Length: 435
Image (cartoon, rainbow, N blue to C red; front, top):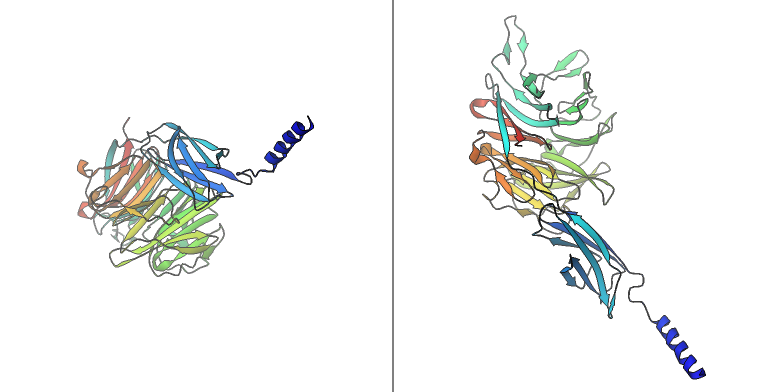
């Protein structure tokens, strides 16, 4: 009896002394959804080189291998729109299975390619007219900026007064109204074409001639830095956290009271800047692209944080770029002599370019979206394309209007595209989804 008791006690002690293969080991699984695809971020704390890690979707194995790094991203495709999937991530070693990390993902639905388009033309007399940028506040409140020469502008009136061209147009839901927005310095006022605009609300709009609309009046912003370039693009999170970019590598930040110049180390023209909140880092991710289209094949991509610009390794061969857009946590898009896409802006994966003619055939000046399933791009020869999360659609065959489109903004209800059309006239297109 004593021998039996001693044997049982010895087995219990021996089992208790055996190492748990998954002690100090934990798994995390995060999923990001597209429409027909998903990105699964696998994170292992206490990575074990001898363990086999498995990722399953609804019981089917997607990945089953050893891991060399603690962080791995798995791409899952051929999913159905607006569908839910359960993912499970676990490890096995020495016949033991670790606790699993699980998550449920619901893919986005596709959006419609079916739009009704209205075309509006402006000016073209006494000078070439063009719209450079657009800001949608809502479907009944849209601003477009540029330089618009009509037959009664850029000339003297009957009293000998000089009549400036227009530099903005406003949509009220029924019609466009041309207007002039001046920068004032004391008793002097200055007309200048406006290349950029950014709106936070109907009473909080920044125009690219250093003018702010507060809902009651236009206020000229005091300059405490030298910014000799025109403002090519504006982006920000609020009227006290605003960025501007211009030619010759110029970039600056506005904190609501003054400007801080951001050194970029480039002489290229910074064409565009865009940001989105990254819920992984808990902060905004801000990127800017620099290029001199049709003059230099050199391109640069910058990440901006704490008023410092870091040059990212873009890894694209000789190219021209004019615009960028990305949603929170990606994917990322660049446009110019083609459209490039990538899941992560800073990962080692290369930017992928859609083959010429598959999405666009001509130069793409601007790209913008509201989410991964609603992205528009526009460019030369009247080309407009839309991505609904599953496929691209090209409106060129619908012959909406020929021209060069360089301005674009969209929300869930409308899309507004601007540029220059035939006979030197400025053109604005307003697209609304068909019911």
